[in-house]
Image 1 (tube, rainbow, N blue to C red):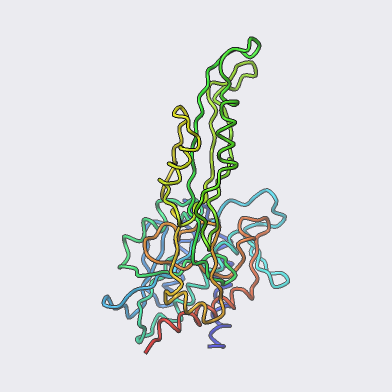
Image 2 (cartoon, helix red, strand yellow):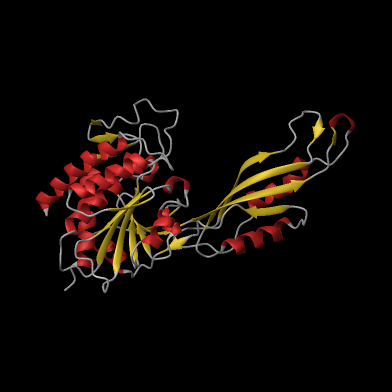
Length: 362
């Protein structure tokens, strides 16, 4: 295993450098999809591609056995203005591999791929394995994992690769974005006419600022709602605005459905003229049981369970999923993004130590 660990790590790092050098913004992942497809083929695997999602099953796939999905994403956000390095030049300095997507989630993507290769030819596994490098995660797009899962054999559980410092993200907040419209009446500002929708919105904003939902989660804490955008349709300085539009970012724990959140907020606003409309209800909160075999195996190797405040493709699958991967979420989307080379090496080792307990049961 020790020799394999170093061999896999060197190959994984070289693959990640190749992926970083190929820009792969969400919905524009064709180049990295080709790289992943080609790489699997070069390593004796028969890959499949659905849109910009690349996947493969282990050589001795047995439809009578349960199946574990090893998944991470190969799309990235666009580099922010703070970069001082070329985001597409994958240099290694002081033990750090720099480049856009290196930490989120390239390190997980290439680590899980080589873990899949480690088990690919095995004939004694108690589970099947499917590897999937998926698209559009950064925008929660409909042509990423959500479109791929129906193309796959039935999945029983998954490891979703995201930067968690190889700790066990067993629960994840859901995300609901609300569009709120507060009506007013237009009028001339100089004559004090109309009904100012911005002023009408102040008590509504106060609800989002101060209301506390009663049910708090041990892993995820309380529901959090934040007003992130305020605008009016009126752009003239001398007209009282007839409407005020708010955008609310709501992070939901597993204690509430999205419908319950909207109902409770409406009751607090207590104004039938105010409309509260969810943009989407796809990104629900999720949790995997602490006694699930993947979680128990993770705890056995010293990793600790926690609740993640961020969303991932874990929110878009219906089967139990453990979020776990090398790197640190705090570096995601940051300028001069990097991952420690050692994190990839240790990540591959930890993944294999975890999966050995689940896959090699006698």
